[in-house]
Image (cartoon, rainbow, N blue to C red; front, side, top):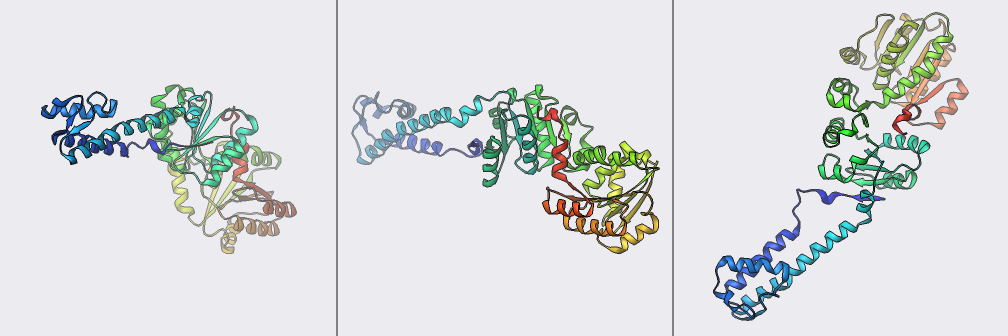
Length: 415
């Protein structure tokens, strides 16, 4: 089901106001021109205030209480007859529209909501959340809200996940109230604008304080996420980042298991130090710093990004850290790395985590040829059948951000 709430934009004045003003003016012109009425002939000589009163009465009872124009200037009678027909028709049309809105199945559906989940945003993160949700709970009512939704995505949401799509702005008070959030089970803010997400969280918590700890906010910017963690709004809600969720799962379920199997301390190479690489390093520091000997960081913007990380993270000194600024695909970067880090010792972990899946896979194949002792990971965003097949053939572990996120969404978020 798709519901459009664009009419809620109060900045747009209804055409009926202009029509009502025009009809009122026409009635005043007719009565002031000397037109006589069959039931109230004295109106011709009455005051302007009296004429205004009878002109407004046309919108309620038409001319039933004053009669019809019978004498006076032709032009005055014409404009008065226009007001006689137009005013009650305008009132009737407004009443019909109001009844239709009240009886609208879309609005009736929203009014019946109880124990539902409201998701703001219609992007890939929403699809991932819905896949997990419908695996564990197929019956809970779900409303997806976005200011603009692609038609194909609308169809996918409705047909595949059985949700109601509402087109509107979550920061509008009227829409927030229409969504029956006072009876909602949970609110999931998965939009693309981090500031708007927290703005919506603040508005919702102010109106419905019972939703404290039941609002989940996805923040795409790690730097912004770490900065707002100290705020009251962040403490009253649950904030997360998809890359952080994926990195936690990879470190907890795979890397620590590998460290526990190997003798001595391990070597880790993070080739690509964007959001994914930064969150992996953060998790390694928090969960496995005592098991690591050295971490090598490769990125074309490594020096700046490591400064950003150190601005908000405490560097754990229990391991060595080597930074290499340059393109992950450039052979000289890897020559420099091998001069300072011995990749022939033990079973080093190499994670190709740039945003370019082709570069990751090609470099992973090259690493496996040069260092067959290494545990090599290559990142893709979505699950890639091609990458998985190549990985199985050459003993390379393919990791999908989407899959890691879906595997690590906490069950309490969908319960």
